[in-house]
Image (cartoon, rainbow, N blue to C red; front, side):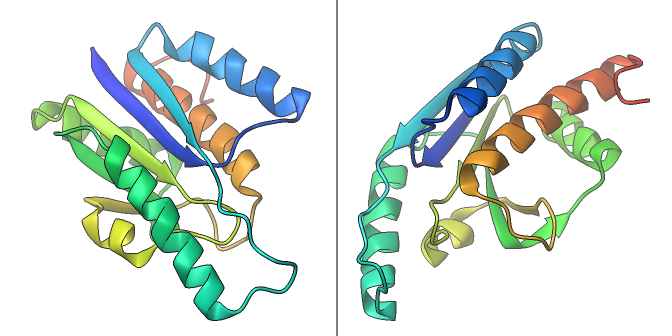
Length: 160
């Protein structure tokens, strides 16, 4: 069984996000061992300078790096990433599994993004869309897409 870790900067607070995450966690339990790790988001002033943003991203990256599993593939969700269709994501996850990668770690940055050193460490850079989404919603979207990928691999009707 594949192990999936989702390392997120920021904590889900809204009930609807918590309920959606719980639903997909339950659904995914049939396909993988899932761990979601929430890390604190750096506090920034109302109008932060670029230097303040860079320091916050670096601090958040330090926390992420401390929690990264020792092995496996790192998949960073970032605007510079490649957009994949749902079937293409299913194929990519299958390709990694067939290649012997049993641990997948997805990285979701905070509200001001992700430090470039995390992006450089990533084996795969994935973009959900050229549109901007709140990072809390991105987590739910990622959980759904991972679930969909497993459903596609299983040949179920969920994707249709």
